Amino acid sequence: MNELRDSAAILHVGMKRTGKTTASLQMMVEFVEKQGKPVVVLDLGCHPSFDNFRRITLEELPKIHSLPGKKYFVYRPYESLQVFPEILEFCTMVSKYVRNAVVFFEDFTTYVEGNFHPIVKGLILNSRNSCNDYVFNVHSFSDVGPFILKHCEIYLVRETIDDPNDLPPKIPYTIRPTVKQALALVLKENQRNRNKYAYRIIYKEENRIG
Image 1 (cartoon, one colour):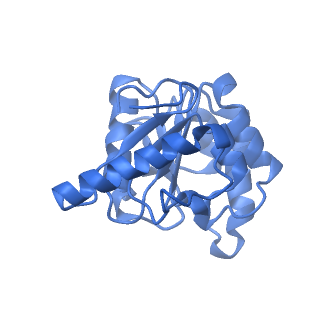
Image 2 (cartoon, rainbow, N blue to C red; image 1 turned 90 degrees about the vertical axis):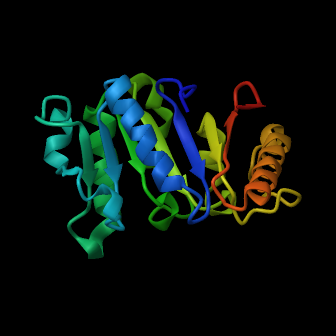
């Protein structure tokens, strides 16, 4: 995991019970303790893994570097009936005011479906200029749209429901053989080890597996 470079959009793909949350927590420690970047988790499902993180408000986001204590934060919308507007406001605040930080979007496809809102697109496209890393946790390649598949520089691949021999056509053509290979390697290792914790990292710009 230490090959992950600064200011990247990362797609973290894996079905449930493949170690996705555990790996995310390990990545967070790496970002905070070794790179000095604060971490914010957008968590709609109130996952217990983030219960010990400081709950942050939208108004506090611009002050994220100066807030006291460990730099592990979780944002959980307060209005369950108006979740999407709060998500857009969260993305707007991050785009405008948050720099040199890491944002994890837990279970990303549970609240962003279909065509991406321009605010979410702008957030992703501006990752390098803001020096922010964005990690999108999803269950399968089938769950995400072409935009995020195109603009995430790194795929962190675990076992999914996707068939390596029949991948969704929305995966960019140039990277499809590499995704197929990575999924096949993960499945083979999991079968050998009799668990589901194998993963491979795809670096899209180099079109290689790490």
